Amino acid sequence: MPTETLHIPLFPLGATLYPEGVIALKIFEVRYLDMTKTCLRQASPFGVVTLDHGSEVRVAGQDIDFHATGTLATIIHFDAVQPNLFMIRAQGGRRFRILQRELASNGLWWAQVEPIGPDEEIEIPSELQPTAKALRKIIENINQQEIPEDQQPFLKPYRLNDCAWVANRCAELLDLPAAQKQHLLTMENPRLRLDMIQDILEDMGLFKNESD
Image (tube, rainbow, N blue to C red; front, side, top):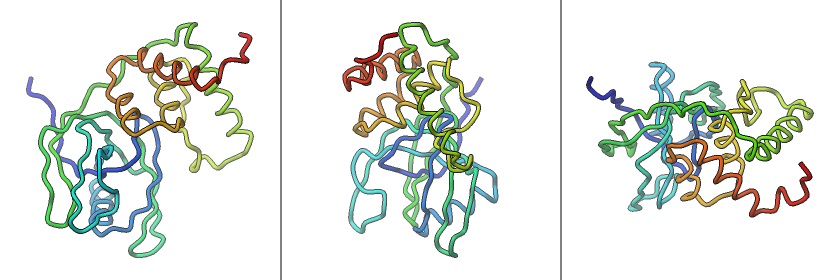
């Protein structure tokens, strides 16, 4: 069977979007205002890719580059604050690999991409439960603050016994270099991804006072 490909606009960011994650964006550049309108009109996704170098906002004469693996993003909330200022929230879908890319005359990147299959669902083993417990506590604290659901950093359902879901949510929270977040995104084995996350948390001393 031929490989499924998509032709999508790209949004290079200093942040990394993971599957089932959520990202809030302030849209004010003309290229992204037009992109947002098109995605809403066609109910189509755009691609979030992590910058390798260069800035998010267009600067005359500046070259940018971004990683070849990204995440599809679907707009789930849209607010036109002003005619030239949108506030959106987008949900991460499948990861993708860029096959070809081109820069349009308005400065918007487009790419032919190959979606990557969803992560295998793997139950969290006992040795990695400390990370799942830590994330559960964070979610409980958020819920106690009665933050409106459309402003919470995580979308339901919470899959706290799934390696990929827990690893991805922790990766979003951690203050890591962009290259390290990108590496976590590209890891094919979610069990190993969670294992790396737990190693990072252990190095930070998060579990040193844990008795269980």
